[in-house]
Length: 399
Image 1 (cartoon, rainbow, N blue to C red):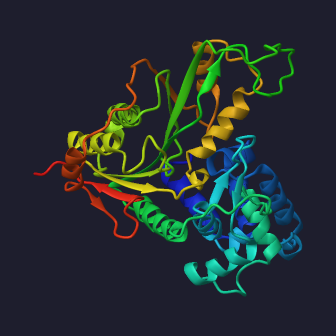
Image 2: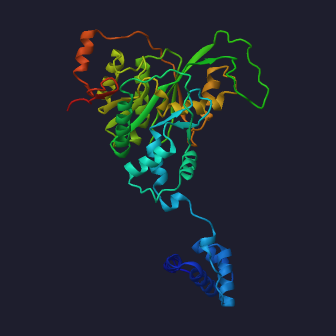
Image 3: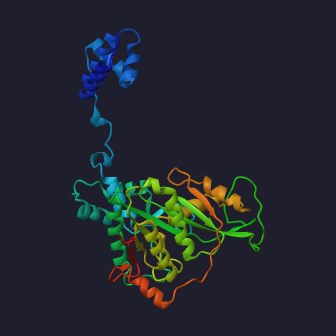
């Protein structure tokens, strides 16, 4: 029996419309019509498992249908009943999570307890309490998503300014809006502490015997990693510099990144930058403001800074990449710059290797503007009232 495309579609659609024994009997009768090698052809053409077809053939021959007994097969996962549950949990917890400050693992720690997540799902996402699974199930879902609750340490002083909560609220709003707009791309960027190049141990573990210097003598060189991460897409871009970490370096890297991905984001007209507010990239550092405004004008794109509050830079998404990098190369000796770059290229982030580039340009420290020059720049940028230090807008070129 010859099967045309229309016949194949008819068989597939009809089988999909049936359930249980009706579907199996239909497939069994179809196999009988196909003749020799009917089971293999049916499996190949319709995608049905031959075991299911054999079961239907037994039902057809015996005249007795097997009970499916779906109720005895256990409960479905919560996300089967609530398809958007995992996405909603992630959206609530993501902005309240931090990476391991020691970069010793890739685990994420969240400030929200399960009861608070449940309350937020009801208030913010429109769920009903009776529809949600129990707290233990929610806890397991959070663990499956990579979020973990850590006990608060009482041995450290409280490091929190008066605007911290307001900054996080604004960050959550800005990030959510940016991720939902096609013409806006959210970037998380930041630098890691310099890495010493030489026969130094970084307390990593390896199966092979590796010997390092017994003292950390003067390094042969130092590399400063700077990462750019679009959280919506998960791609990681790593740039290594031997020079000092300066404002010119920090803004120069996005310029190179922009040239490399220009064709990938043709609709983007605005960049939302998540960063810390350190000394080199502070929104009040004159050279940083000048270079960012220049970057915005040169690329004809609006740039908005959305900075994390002091002592909370670990919530910045790019910080989570440093834990993966440290775990990847901690058991090796970075005895030369090519070796460090090679190990960085072989790491994976969300199943993909990062784009790694070495910047050989040297940057001068201490470059700054006069008060008069900075006053002129302040007239060209916009700061959010009340949170002016953490949220700054750099408009593109006029016209």
